[in-house]
Image 1 (cartoon, helix red, strand yellow):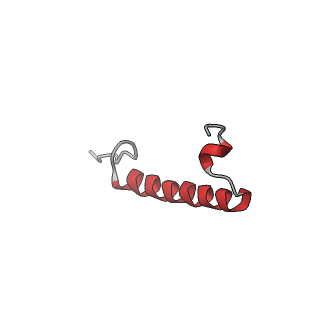
Image 2: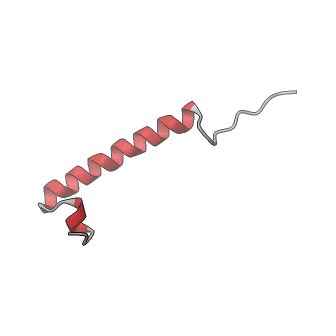
Length: 47
């Protein structure tokens, strides 16, 4: 019987992609702040 590897939960595969997407989101946030001259909280209307 072959054991099927799952790609859900706290696996190395999931954590790798979570990290990559978090870095991408952070970079997009910084680029947006740089281009608009406004912080993220100001853009969201929280300040």
